[in-house]
Amino acid sequence: MKIVGGPNSLNLACKIGEALGIPLIKVRTKRFPDGEFYFKFEENISGENILVVQSLCPPQDVRAMELFLILHTARDLGADTIKVFVPYLAYSRQDERFLDGECLSASMMAEIIEELGADALYTVDVHNENVLKMYKIPVYNLTASGELARYFAKKDLKNPLIIAPDDEDLAIRRAKYAADVLKTEYDALEKRRDRYTGEIVTYKKDLRVRERDAIIIDDIISTGKTVANAARILKEQGARRILVGVSHALLIGDSVKIMMENGVEEIVGTDSVINEYAKVSVAPVLARALRGEVEQA
Ligand code: R5P
Image (cartoon, rainbow, N blue to C red; front, side, top):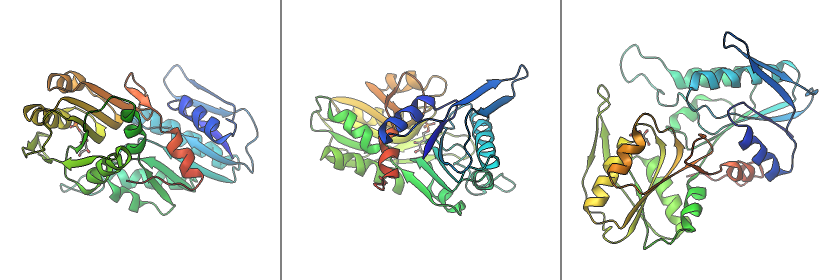
């Protein structure tokens, strides 16, 4: 197998290559003056098994187009098999028509990725597992919860409590996964989001967190309001420290400020999204999956 790193995930692709002991394919990319993307394989890939690595964090449309062009070129030039690693699988929220007339973005992504020749898709902590059912090819939803927990294990934690900031099944499973790694307890808050206004309400409950370190584990931080609500409740109940581990730290607008103002001490993201909070790599998670050790929440 050989690896192709998309423009958004070159370092991640290198780390995966190092972990698996396999080379990166030389490629050339550029942007034309009008903004269009150009991609070229600098070596023959005909008959090769290749792994394409590209996260689809904002600007999602730009990143998606880069991925599509790489896949199309690989298929067109005769790659034997194409595995795709998309840590942040954008457009995973809209897996059904919640309101009449809405688009089915998740379904469209599945159709395009399959049509472009992908034989298997690996992603990390997908927002909604229903999205996976839209693919006919094998899809593996890996979790970064273990890697995030191992990061926090190096801290001087006091009786840690893992918190899922909402009580969806997947959120609870991610929190449990992290709690199991840290050999500690977990709990979940109940959250509701207004489909029209986007407003979030988190319901209070007794979390038994006094003088303990709380670690909020979530898949995505976008506006930061989900984490801020959870942090406020944890603070009110006397948590010693509030730490946050997130698979995809999109951190839109003043999300970091909102979370810090509500008591968050540290935000830890992964290299699914490249920013100053990307302190954990998802490379080992994919490397293990390709060796058959699939880590799923
Ligand atoms: C919930 O539905 C997700 O797991 C995340 O909690 C959510 O996407 C975070 O969004 P925001 O940061 O805008 O509250």
